[in-house]
Length: 116
Image (tube, rainbow, N blue to C red; front, top):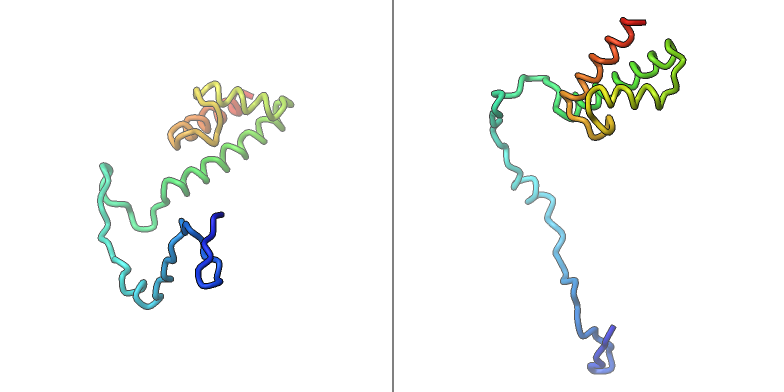
């Protein structure tokens, strides 16, 4: 970068990263807000209820286990089972599916097992 000699000391002409003081830990703790619960369209969350992300992870695990059972029982390849379950629900992947799509995918998989 460009520098300017000032009193024999090299100084940068442009300092695009200003010094930002570190926060004082004690003040940060005092600044913490205790916000009240805010209801969604479905009302207040139930105590101990799973978050949407926790439920999604649970559904993804259940879908994975179900797909393994279908593979074991049918002899179909894992990819074929995944593609068919995704097609039945109209999704591209489990990772991009909503919770309701994952629940529908589970129901389709369970129905597939019952037909065996």
